[in-house]
Length: 214
Image (cartoon, rainbow, N blue to C red; front, side, top):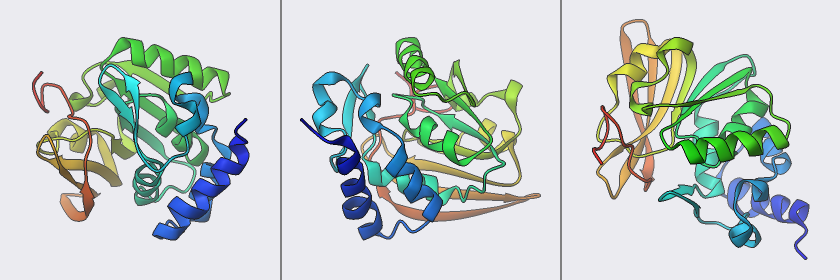
């Protein structure tokens, strides 16, 4: 029988702290959120392992380190409205829900959105709203957002997302080819956009009007 609390602490120490994840709030949230509840029974024993896992519909839950690294890159303080593109299992949304005021997350696959909604409700997250739509177009009706995080690889930054990002906002997205990308941070200050390349990564493709085609 796996002790998931011990597994979470081991994950934090060996996968996050050892790779320079240093934001105390982020580390505490990773100790708290039950990642094993966001994967199927088939993969539950691997929930805290150092690799991504399938969640169905050709999608994955990212390895814990990547989730932590992207989260830390958002520089959350607690009062932000955050848009997530690619709900997937709902795990990233749960992490964000612990660190900001409101989470709006969009998923193009209805079955994944429903599964994530059910898990988030069962785990008590009330500040998350899920929409089923083309994530490359953002969520205009809920904009603007203080932070935006994209959990699929895009050929370029979808223009709608930058429009929906509030002034002084931060946006993290994997940009590149279908098989590999560079995790990129965009910071918006008035008309000025600052771009920083953070690290290489591999995500499933971001499908949609302003992403990859099916």
